[in-house]
Amino acid sequence: MSSSSSLIQGISISVSDDDEASGKVRVRVRRKRNRPPASARRRFLRRAARWGAPFLLAFLAVSLFTYEYYRLSPFYASSSPSPPPPRAAGNLTRAARAADGARKSCLKMLDPEMLRNLELPETPEQNLPVKEVVYRSSLPHLEDNISSSMTNSRFNSFTGYQTLTEREESFKPKEITTVHCGFYSEKGGFRVSDVDEDYMKSCSVVVATCAFGGGDDLHQPIGMTEVSVKKVCYVAFWDEVTRSAQQEEGNKIGENLMIGLWRIILVRDLPFIDQRLNGKIPKLISHRLFPMARYSIWVDSKSQFRRDPLGVIEALLWRSNSSLALSEHGARSSLYDEGKAIVKKHKATPEEVKIQLDQYRQDGIPDDKRFNGKKALAEASVIVRDHAPLTNLFMCLWFNEVVRFTSRDQLSFPYVLRRLRLPGVHLFPVCARKDLVNSFGHRRKVKPLAKDGR
Image 1 (cartoon, rainbow, N blue to C red):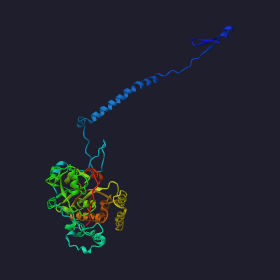
Image 2: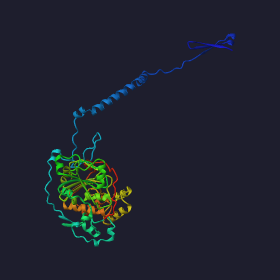
Image 3: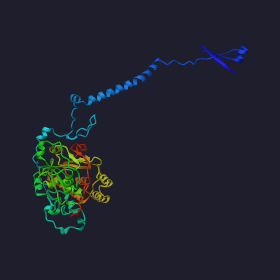
Image 4: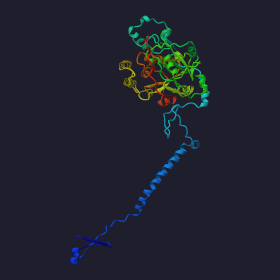
């Protein structure tokens, strides 16, 4: 059966063949759905979001580009006012960071004009308990009295064979104090040429470093005045292994025995198999190498010294009336915690660290994290010191502890400091050490000496 529909103004009329026959017509009204009309504001927001978003993003991009352009523009940098210098509290302030993230200087140095006119002060009369240090290397020594246990230790003819009784007596300073301090005999090692020895005797202020066993590269110092270069000796101690390694990389010693600002001194017959222990000789007992020097600055071979030496001595020693200055430790505060870290990092065996710490506990050294208001642990990659008798004694005792126990000098420094009670020790904050040097880390592993110890 077929059907047809027609739609007239919303009225649907269905007609079928049967209906026509019967004369009936069915009428059905279709109602329209009443939809609420969208508001004008909503339609406007849709259109704005559709067409305005790309323009907004483009505007922000242009604005950001314009801001960065003018911020980095030299003209803008020169015309904008510079921030005022930080206020200094004494000679050192804690590290602070500026609004742009740059670290402000933590070490308050003299201005360049004052540095150029800086002179060494006259040696003051000091009322200290030690007037003179006598080294046992200059006294007769009977090797027949050496016990077999001492010959099996790291003591040798260079260091002398310090007994426990002598060790204990060395911490009781007298006006004239006798102590072991290396260079026991001419056969003891660490030999230099006569020309180098004469040069070392001519130095009154020294910046020293060393690299034995082919260790680190030589980093040229920066940041000093021309006047300071003429007054300060920059000395680097090398052995033949390091000289050969550096020569292969094009760093040859000149006819004037210099490389850049460094005077290279070649050392023969090093006294220890452990190259770290050989490095403690110029690091800790530089007064034995530079007998006429009044001040010295030690810089580890992994670091580049970046300040004027006389200015550093003025800031860290003269201004605070100190005799010895080195950095607080950045990570730990206790020598016993340091011992655990040394073992964990495999820088010494657990057995030798235990022997050292047991001896320190027996000698009454507490597990304190503070000493005289500072951290009880120091970091010794930079050492600034005078060469007065009491300071020399301190450094000799420190060296003897390093020889007797582990080569980790950070472990023995707090012990010697508590036992000797050296006045005028300046432990400056870590941020100041970062102002003094650029650290590059150790480049290559050193080669141990292939010989028996003396």
